Image 1 (cartoon, rainbow, N blue to C red):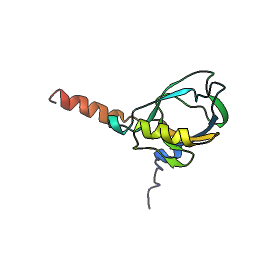
Image 2 (tube, one colour; image 1 turned 135 degrees about the vertical axis):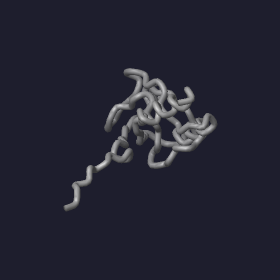
Image 3 (cartoon, one colour; image 1 turned 90 degrees about the horizontal axis):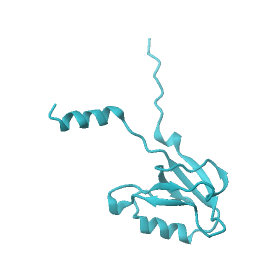
Image 4 (tube, rainbow, N blue to C red; image 1 turned 90 degrees about the vertical axis):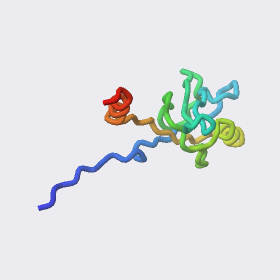
Length: 117
C-alpha cells in the first residue's frame, strides 16, 4: 500500500576527513579562500600537487568547504580566525571537508528571473 520512499542523499554523508601534516617547509600545501568577511564559508583554494603531506584519509580537492580543523568547527569564521585555529593546532591536522553542491534548477531559475521571465 505504501510507496517505497526514495532515500535522499544528505550532504553530511559526503563529508570526508583528511589527516595531514606540515611539509618540510612548514606549510600545509593549500590556500584558503572565502571566509565570513566575504560572506562565504571558508573553502580550499589551490591544493598544490606534491606539497600536501597526507598521513591518512582522502585527498583534498580545490573548492571544497572546510568544516572542521581538529574537531573545531570553522564554518562561519573569517580566514584570519581559521588560520589562527590552524596555527595553534599541532600536527597532524584532521580536516573535515565537503564538496560544494550546486543545484542546477536553482541556477536556471535565477537566470530565468534575471531575464524577466
